[in-house]
Image (cartoon, rainbow, N blue to C red; front, side, top):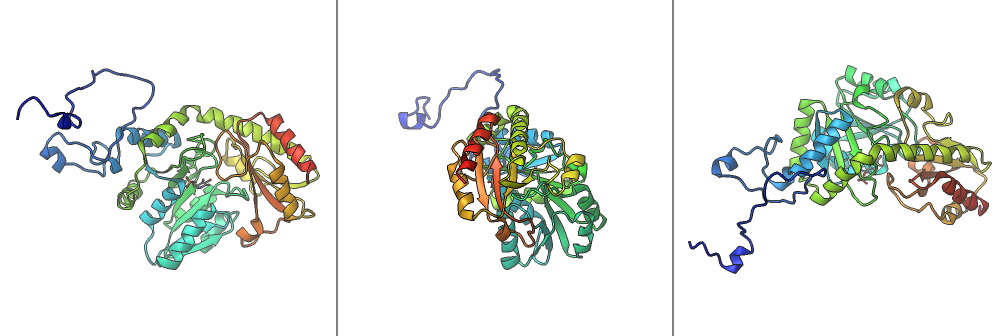
Length: 388
Ligand SMILES: *Cc1c(COP(=O)(O)O)cnc(C)c1O
C-alpha cells in the first residue's frame, strides 16, 4: 500500500494527532458509538461491566464516566449510572430489581409517570404495584409482604408535597430485607442526604437542577450496594440506556453553579410562599418549610433546604375556570411541566383525581420559582389574583 492515500480514503483516515498536554477547566466532549481497541487482545479482554476501560459508546465514554463519578461524589454514593431521562432512570431501577411475582410499594403521591409505570408492571409483567399513604412512616411494616422487593419513596411527593419519614420507612424495610429507592429530584441531592438517612438507591432527574437550563433530559441512579449496582448495570446494558455526549456536557456544565442556583430558588420560593400565605384567596401553603405542609416536622429534622418547587391550595369557593384564568393571567410564570430552570412556571392540577384519599378542600396550583427577582414574581401573582 502506498503512503499516498486517495482523497476518498483521506477523508476517513487522517494522520494528524493533536499535541498532548492540553488542559482546560471543562470536560472534553467525546462523541462515540464505536470505540477503537489497540489490538485484538485488548478487544477480547474488554469488559463493559467495569469502568476501567472502554468498549462501546453505549457503555460509556470519558465524558459520561466523569458525570457519573461527579454525581456519585455529590450524593455520596459508590456507583452511578446515567439514563436518557429521569423516567428512564426509574424504569432502570424497576427492571433491575423486580421480576414476575414480586411486589413493589409506591407512595400515593408518587411522580405520576412512575405511577403509570407501576400500573403497567402490574398489568403486563406479573408484578404487584401497591400504593401507600406517603405519611405512613414506620406503619409501612404492615404492608410489607414476603414477596415485597422494593419500596419507592419521594421526598417530598410530587405536586402535593407531603414529606415522608424516610428513616422510619427504611428501618421497617430493612428489618424485612426490602430495598428502598428514593426519587430525590426535589432536593437535588443537596438538601437531603438520602444515603445517610438509610436509602439504598437514589434516583435523580438531572433534567431539573443539575442541568438548570430547561433544555436537557437525563436521569441518574446511584447506590452504595455492590450487588444492587451489578443488577442495575445489567439492566442499564440490556435496556440500551445511552446518553448523548453534548447533553452530558450540559449537565456537567450546570454542576458548578447548582448549589448557588438551588439556594437562590429556595430563598425566592420562600419569599413568594410567605407572601401567598397572607392572601385571602389561598387557604394552604404546601411548601415543606411551612407548618401547613404535611410532614413539615420531618422536613425540619432531615432536610437542610427546599429549592424552588411548592404548591398552594386556592379556596374552594373559586371555580376551576377561575383558577385556570388566574394561571392564564400570569405573565412571568409560564405554563409548563418540569422545573429547576431559570424561568418560573405554574401548573394547576386536579389533585382530587390524582389521589386515592385526598381530603384538603380547594384547588391545587403548583409553582416553580425560577431565578427572577422575587418581588417581580409577587407583583405578577398579585396582578393575576386581581383577575380572579
Ligand atoms: C421530572 C421528574 C422526573 C422525570 O424526569 P424526566 O427527565 O422528565 O423524565 C421524575 N421524578 C420527579 C420528581 C421529577 O420532577
